[in-house]
Length: 542
Image (cartoon, rainbow, N blue to C red):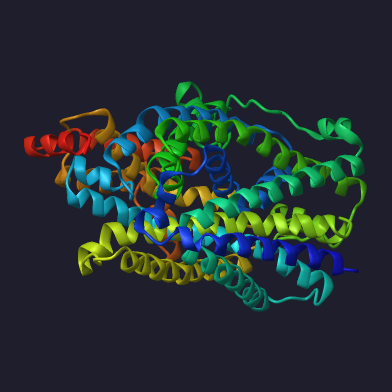
């Protein structure tokens, strides 16, 4: 198989990204420049950067895997909540952050409640983001392992798989951390613009090619199974009446109710309280341009997800017509849906186009990784390092600390990715999307609940009450999602006792449950009058 053209395409991509990233170094010599691009980034570039962060390699492979496995578009239902949440974020969250002039979004919580709420929330973000981004970092390395199986050694052992994963993710992380550490948020955003263009080209060409190979659009639609787009949920057959219906809805991943309730709260958390996403929104020139970029990114998500799900369904059609015994299988002997798209890229796509799609995979990985590194370093340095070790007197000193923080978190992300690669190598049947979204579900409800108390009330919540509420929110979600049972099972236990028939909620519902529990506890505590006054002063023009 001639891979020369593909290698040229991939090397050109790497050269372009590194060149653009490093060119931004001269404009990132101050704290404001490194973290927020001096708040002068064009709204359309912010929009592209938001899309680059959302469309990770997990989406690139995971969503086609969902399309292949489910053969419908019910996943798109979640886009309704994603768009609704963006409107709320643009109307409530972003204006508050601009009024307070925050760099780390958790500075708002200190102004509203006190320093402990800020540190707890920032620590929760740091831990969750390292776990989630480290998990995503593993995903694009699937392509390398599959290529090794196909072209070098088909009998790869789990241990060999692990070392292949390790080599690929270390290489991607090192390259990305170089331009992120030197170029700051400007390097992140302008490389994201290029990466989104490559990503859309890759997806468009992949869809076009598959439509031609799988019987056209009629072949696609004929393969779609009910429910095709809208799923109202089905009751649990063992529990008649309203309880059985509610139980069935909560235990189903993609329904209308998950779209308008569950996914709305998921996006409120990821786009309103996550430093990774909010930081790029705050690089826009003003709140109006930030809101435009945020809302339009939600609109753009719909065709993107339609494309990736269509690719998954067309892959099913293609391999029904062109049976290939070498399709990757899991330990149960069934097709591994998460590896069907990578297999198709390597085996079927023509040279050049194959290289473009591989570059698209790398683009999604490097785009989400660069933003994670920048936001993790910003949050850690602003919320902890300067408080512990003092703030340097010069802008050059502050930026040096931020760059060191970027490198430090690169090591943390590699460690998590290696752990994920180890687990996946020994459990090939694991699905990608639920793993990635599930990590946020356990903790971001607590984070969103505290932010909502701060944004929607003026005199409720304080440092002590918020800490209690966040802990209750996490425990509430852990219990209702069955996390206690899963953890206990690893040690031969059974978890906490449960009432007969109690639902085990799926990942779209976890943040909603955590938010309600956290908010309900936090509002029971009153904000001290002096803190209310300090928050008022913090919002006044300087």
